[in-house]
Image (cartoon, rainbow, N blue to C red; front, side, top):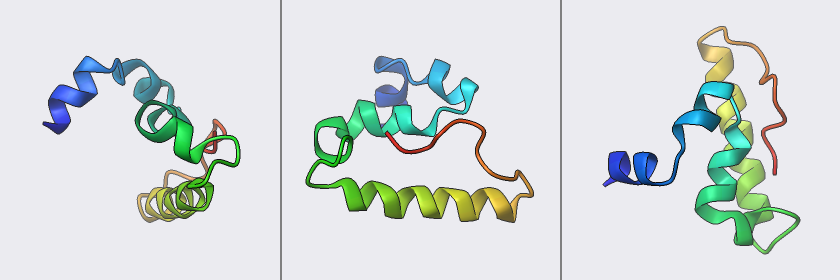
Length: 67
């Protein structure tokens, strides 16, 4: 199901650009973007994403990961 969703929603291009926020906009944009009711969930996910990047020595994201 995840692979279908990834392909059906055109997530390859944002992923190749390193646009982590695009994932949130596509999946939960109305809830988590622009200070929506789930905005804090997004912030928690972004902090986890940043920690994982550091584990792989990838440094900080180059595109703002918050939508």
